[in-house]
Structure formats: C-alpha cells, structure tokens
Length: 138
Image (cartoon, rainbow, N blue to C red):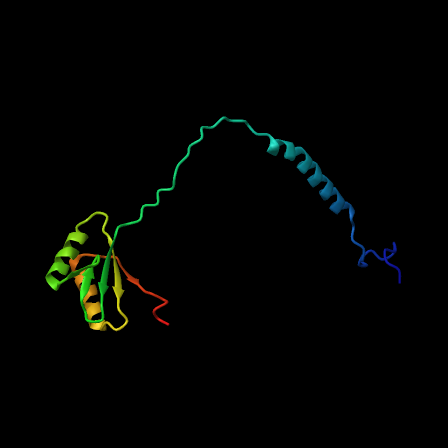
C-alpha cells in the first residue's frame, strides 16, 4: 500500500503541507517590520509640570467612651444623659458630619452601649465606629 499513488485519489495524506504556514509567517514578519518604526515615532512635547500634594482630609471624629460603671465620656469629659443628647445634636448639625468613635470597657453592660448607639441614631449621627484594644483582650 503506497500513499499518494496516482491510481487512488481519495487516499489520506499523512504529511502536513508547510508551505502555506511559512507564507503566513513571512507575511506577518513583513507587517511587523513595517509597523514597528511607525509605533516608535512620537511627537516631542514640552508639557508643564505640576507638583501637588494628595488631599488627605480625614473627617473629624468624636471620642465617646463608656466605663464599667456606665459613665459616658464625650471627648474625655464625663457627661450626663441630657448633655450627651445636646452634644449629639450639635455634632449632627455640623458639616461634614463627624464620626462617633465608641470605646467601651470589657465589663460594660451591653444595655449601656445599645442605649448610646440608639441616642446617636435618633440624634442624627450616621457614622459610628467601634474602638477596640487587642492587647487588652488577651
């Protein structure tokens, strides 16, 4: 049995014809040789230089802490419930609105924390963050 014999035209040819592949590769090579100098051509411009510092504006924040006895401190000053509501209303009216950073003692009752959060929400403060001390948790 011989492949490519003239008497049998429908035999399968087991060799790949490399001529079309080489032709395509040569055409691609010529296209790349022609286009690379065009890509490297650039126009020299003398652009102005500007020096700017990033605008890293941090929103103001208010430190509120609750100790184990339930005493609330507003930025380090102990306040009662009426003064707390007045301070929250004043802070909520500021623009931009400050964040409320809440720091609670480990032995503080959850009821005190929930009451403070409810007062902040009803007073109009939308942003509340919790401050924790990972070293004290150990």
